[in-house]
Amino acid sequence: SQTIHQWPATLVQPVGSPLSLECTVEGTSNPNLYWYRQAAGRGLQLLFYSVGIGQISSEVPQNLSASRPQDRQFILSSKKLLLSDSGFYLCAWSPNRSGNYGYTFGSGTRLTVV
Amino acid sequence: DAKTTQPPSMDCAEGRAANLPCNHSTISGNEYVYWYRQIHSQGPQYIIHGLKNNETNEMASLIITEDRKSSTLILPHATLRDTAVYYCIVRVANYGGSQGNLIFGKGTKLSVKP
Image 1 (spheres, each protein chain N blue to C red):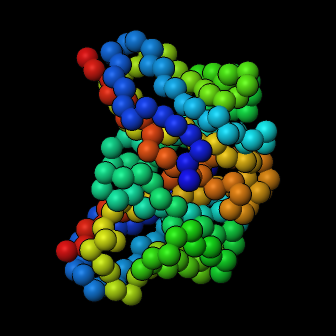
Image 2 (spheres, each protein chain N blue to C red):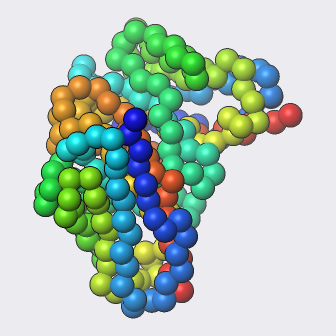
């Protein structure tokens, strides 16, 4: 069966520090991968998606970047965090083939920038 | 931009059916209706999806009107654990690109009360 892992679960970082959040998927190959963010009291916003190694699409301009160095690994990064980067970050995957498939989400990382 | 309209909040008594409405008056012929829910501080969970026929699974039933401009998610016997934000989303089938990305709106906060 397929599983998705995100870590860390919680993170407190000072303003201006770098960020690296990692997401890995097991039990499938060539998945579509996604990063979402949920700011406090707000909805889920799609940040990045990837349909293959090295292929990253950004949905919104921001202080963050994403990379996919391996087939089942998706990394969210920042060189210098802002207070506005605080939020609940979720990774998700879906099969990369035509058809009707739902997304499976990870358990999320709660980031607080102080 | 979310293509759906949902009430911001609803209450339901434990053990009763919860009926969550969703309007999607601009839905296209190739778009499906998906429902997800997000329990506090967790990742969204897939519930059900449909195109034009009513659908039922172990979690819920989905009723789609004949003109497909609205739908209702039914939780037949709501429990306290069903308290969550419920998202109604319309999207095309996944083709590996942005066309099928899940875009979340604000959802309906369902509170199941004892």
